[in-house]
Image (cartoon, rainbow, N blue to C red; front, side):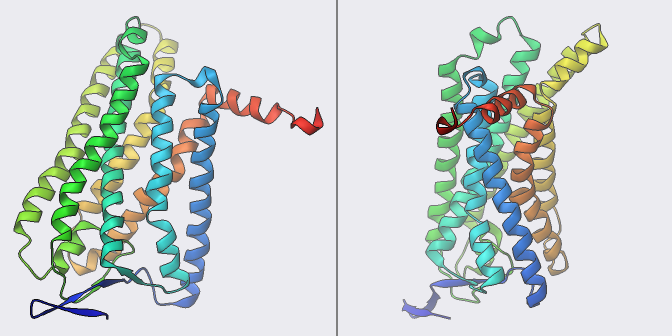
Length: 316
């Protein structure tokens, strides 16, 4: 462990991420599995972004927000998985304090941004289903840009407050983090100075950017469900529900894994469970995003078919 003398104390400048296992054979299997998942996440979400960008009939509010979500998933996963793969296969378990804080900052900012984007997408579906005649007037292009920009900007600024408070902490050891990435709670536990101010600000802030969007999503879908039930025909109900089923599935997966991760007990016996549930929203949710939104989506199918049917220039 590298140490520096600072005000008669020894302050660490790097952490050790313990990862998953010390068994070599298991680590090789985990490396191959997570590498395949990472490739699928990046390629799948890039495909969604390119399909929307290069197909004008997909230039609608719903797909605009989907592009934001797909871009976020690429960045979100790339912030954690490459380092996690190095920990597993190369056993490069150390990470500098600065690097750890930066990883936490992007993790917290992107997770909070996803909460707000999911809430914005639920509002979009609410307007489309509950106020279809006014939808083109209400959900305009400039409004879409403002909603998305506010989601990104607000979350990055709010997380920056926690980041500044954490950066002012002194870490004197031990320097081991029993996780595969830098999260807020393990960092606070390793601090050797008073963290009450940091926790007092961080926990209400994180709760607000998580619970407020969830309540907005719940309210939106309550109105959507009421509107769908008022449709007289079963075919009409099915068509209306199909326009928001993909988003509802993503919301359920994302918030379900968050709840499973952060509401489990903090005892050592639950640490493996915490790591497993963390993998769900770091890897599985971003991987299923393009699958869920394209599986039963005729617009995406048509855009993909057109792209595949186009011949390269040298074959024309």
